[in-house]
Image (cartoon, rainbow, N blue to C red; front, side):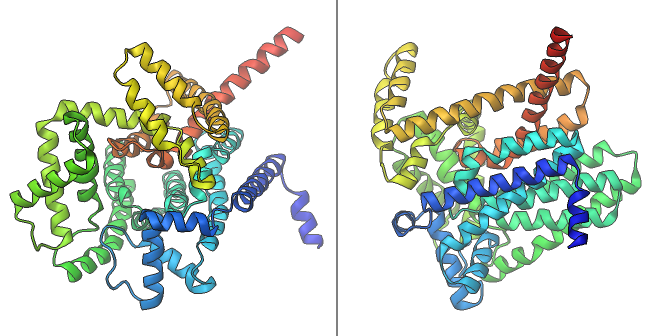
Length: 465
């Protein structure tokens, strides 16, 4: 007891703030968990009947538990999250509520890691502000309450970024190795990360090209990353006869990115466009009877050719998707998820009608449509709007501060992460795709808020004497 009292008394004021924030955030997350009942039978039945990602993850996890193997694993997914769910199911039984509850604690760890990253880049007080911003991000809270891989993936990715910064700071080889391991683990959870270590290593090798010892450690990190991915490449080859990590990239490029672009360009129904694209790709590459890995590769090839032929128009749709990912509120989706309001179709219909109006009329139509929903959706939308205005405005101030103070190394590092994930969000542009960058623009936003606070405090001192 005396030892415990000594440790508590030795805590700094900053540590008290940190512990208070983490405890408050955990309480808020648990209140949402027990208040909104994301594990209820009604919500789970609705999600599983829709055949979306939560249903797929649950089904794959149950199959892993029952077969005790990855036999007949769906190549559209990577195994990290289904295996993690399967482990929880094996211990506590096949109940998604347990997974969602554990994700609340994992999200707290992500906040802690973000605070440590921001403290390394700037100072602990800015790290604490960044933690507050990220702790109350509405979309991060929402997705932590769903059976989706984002919460665990972001935690792993933040841990990898923290270790990478510590690696460069201390030059310890063990940190570089652990970073490679974590980046590989993150790739097993989200296929979107697969090119990140390669591009990041290239960027670091160019930046530190004068330091051969550091370059060798970066290459060791990259080697560790690649070695840990090889088993899954070999597994897919043994199952399907083709080398590939998953079919997700090729399928998504053709059936989402290209299909959405072609649907907007021609005005055709998205499902009809998808059928036509699959038929054209199948005829061109003779895909009938081919394994899914091979088919996905050819889908990617067909998509690349389409993008080259329609580069300008595709770029416009791509930029629109990035804009949507950044500014989309998903308020109706969130309300519908927990309260079963089912208003999105009527809202979309109103937006479709005003597309024929002039720009001013179009804006007014969107404004009217915004309030033509349930009171829950309106209140949530206003709350998210206020949050976004504060965060994005302070983020702009933070960016100007970095440029003015010539902190180009930090700007390049965080900018690379933002561009990578936003670039891949692309045409689809849903809010879920921006979640990996939320912690990082929270850091820039925290810097902006800190700069405003310091200037306000100085001006107040000048006035009061």
